[in-house]
Amino acid sequence: MKEKLQSVKIITALAIPAILENTMQISVGFIDTFFIGKLGTEALAGVSASNSIMNIYIAFFLAVSVGCSALMTRNIGMKDYKNTNNILHQSINLAIGIGFLSGLINVIFAKPLLSLLGLSSNVIKITLPYFWAVGTPSVLISISMILSSALRSNKDTKTPMKVGFIVNIINTILNYFLIFGLGNWNGLGLLGAGIATSIARTLGVILLWKSLTVSKNSNTDKSSSDIIITKNKLFKLNWDIIKNISIISVPAAMEKLIMRTGQLIYISMIISISEATYAAHNIAGVIESFTYLPAMGFGVVAATLVGQQLGEGDVKSAKESGILCYIMAVVFMSIVGAVIFIFAPYLTSIFSEDPAIIRDGSKALRIIAFVQPTLAATFVITSALQGAGDTKYPMYITFIGIWFIRVTGIYILGIKLNMGITGVWLAIAADIVIRGTLLILRFITGKSLTETNINYIK
Image (cartoon, rainbow, N blue to C red; front, side, top):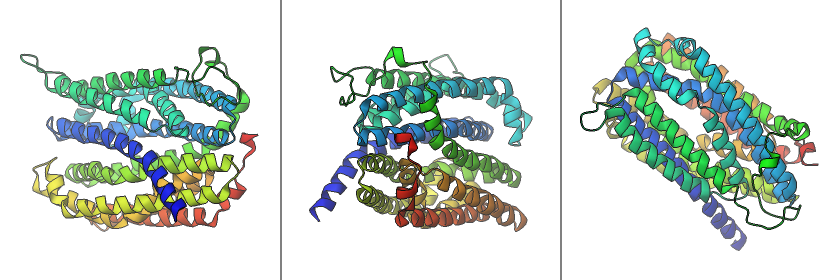
């Protein structure tokens, strides 16, 4: 019993900073949506579409960070800090390359990409400057994800939280003034929101980078627990390490890509129902994202503990840590879900005064409130599996859930049966329940903890 309580304390201590960091990030998204909503429905639709495209690139950035975390935690568990540092540097190199490539794609193909989502020509015209402002410097996102992942892999969840707090405060302040102006200056509107976001992200990268360039130890041998960026290791490619990162990252990238491309398809379906339905869907999504907070935080801890404990050779503790993180996430998410269910109309009305949007947004929120336990699994158990190096199974499950259940369900229920927002979110809920259940079964059998390819740790 004492060991369980001690584990709960350790998990809580690691999870709270991660939860707070995610809370700040989502709060800024909440505030951004509020500000942009003042510019009109077209601006809100344009930003949502832009974010949907950016999420595809972020899928690849996340995949590299998953590979980075899985390898780093395993090597930290083995106390091989020299190789841990090598993994960090190669992950940064990958992040820089992928980030610049994504930015180039955004510069060249911005208009066609936005057109694919079915936006009107007027909405595209309004959105393009914003999309270029946030999409061109995509490398800022990719680097920050790797740096944050490296810190968390070493059980440092406080530094990313502190940096996130500073970045989000700056972003909020700049957003207000650059969107609406000051005094006689009328501001830049939607473009201002994009510029504010990129300035804040630049600051975040600088602060995270600095936190990983200050040595805490005087030696750099295998026994040193110092994880630090050194100039002489950057831009020198180690193909063996890159290959090992890819073993973990490619399936993780495919999982995210499957999810994001599916999202693009069903978003276009929702837009085809009506712009009001899409607006309600988007608002509900922003509010619903607050239920993710506990799961995202406990997911970070699950990946870290499972990876390190497997590195130590303690499979039993790795399994127990993953399950305990999941249980704790379910408790927190159920509480948040209950609050959202009760106050759904009030929360939706913060973003819109349109009665139809408030009604539809409330329906969506009340549907998703019932699937919080399995929603927790899609975050926490997926992270635990990825921490173990098992990224293929979540990829397979995501493909089945997103394309065969969510996309197909939205088409049948939302469009063909004319159920509107109710049909859309029933399909989403069905996907979450099935995926979450299958992920839980995978982890509790322990198969991923004993049969995962672990050549990358040798």
